[in-house]
Length: 374
Image 1 (spheres, helix red, strand yellow):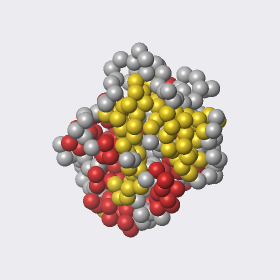
Image 2 (image 1 turned 60 degrees about the vertical axis):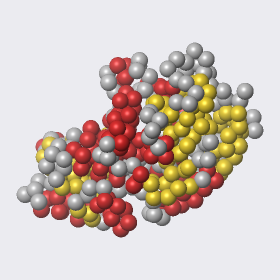
Image 3 (image 1 turned 90 degrees about the vertical axis):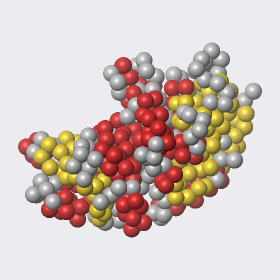
């Protein structure tokens, strides 16, 4: 029997999240229903509300970073049981498509309909409904909901001893930022690293750079609170703007610049990519992780600098990591005291306060806001 669930949706873009009661389908084969314990409030869901990231259907239920407990398992779906604790991955990993077979699990082909909001194998089939109308599901999971039904390709079982509120954060923000440093930028011991923007993603790029052994980690953000938090997570220096950060990196590297620059600004524009490229040394790496208006095209950069200095401009989704391998690994690091998760949470909200949470994010008072469910 389908169940009802309270959830935060937008009806149009630009729009504001509002709480409604949805009807949620029972799980089919290869699907599970999960009772959410917590959901992170990521900037990407705000991009959907502003229209920077257009989606295929409205109403649209947000949320793509969460953890909870399985309450129902679809027929003929081995390997999952009621009571299992899971973390959602906003990038599915089927293990069978061409991308997965090349080891690029974060680029799994089944994520093609992520912004359509439908089941991955059928763009006309939806799991959520509002007054008889189909509702799009963010990344096929929609964690801004008390309950959600999703493909098993989008859930990762975890140790039941791990607090679900903390575990929720490794569904997006932590691996995306941490992996942007460790995997995409290939930070090495002794490196000088610049992180542009130290919100929910950038703060974890700082953590990743520290873990990889960078000796100088320069955090850039106009918000003083975020610069202070960055120092708690491993930043050695902080600046309000990239120009100051670049000048400092050059001053300690005989004019060369940083080994890598990771762009995790909330709304990324082409000029930010150009600034990152200008901040790095010969054969350095600029990693673009943040998003902005995805319809905008163009980066005002010097192609001569790119070519003659042999620099690398690298994109990164989910930090280049593998959901099934790296979500458990990050949680093991958390259990061992090697990764900060609890310290990331600056404010907690209810499902009725999603719009307020994003106002707080824009006001610069959150590193990571989290919805906590009853």
